[in-house]
Amino acid sequence: MKNVILICGKICSGKSYYAKQLAAERKARILSVDEEMLKINPTGLFGDKHEEVAAEVKAQLLAQCVELTKNGVQVILDWGYWKRQDRRDAEAFCMTNGLPYEWHYVDVPDAQWRRNIDKRNQAVLKGEEKGSFFVDDELLEKLQHNFETPDQSEMAGWIIRKNG
Image: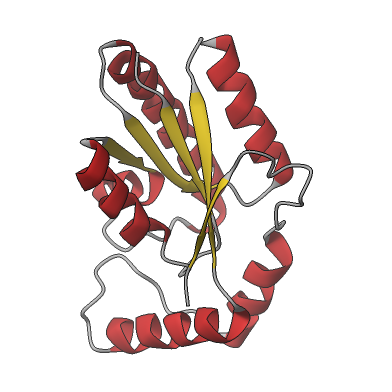
């Protein structure tokens, strides 16, 4: 049985890019909530239904994860895992289903993070980023507030990828 790779990091930290690198190296399959939500609504915006839709998509992807992993396919869950509780829930899911797992944290310094967001915003304005949304100052503040950086006790054994 292959293990599940759980990728944690802020929006625009380089998680998806890193997931693609890992997928190529390990011949793994990426399961991305963002990609699945874009299939449902190409704008990627769901308003007050966002959390509900995301929960449904995650449930479907977790079922796929179990099936794929038990059939010898390595799976990468490119979800962000912004909250400690999300990370605990992911670990509990893996343990309950007998799935070995490893955490990867994509860490990016604030200055690089802001450059990444600016680059994304420019691409959104030019119409080059399908499904991505513009991150204004209000949303940026909300995103900063919502991300719970993993602490040292939580990250024991994690693989840390420094971007920037």
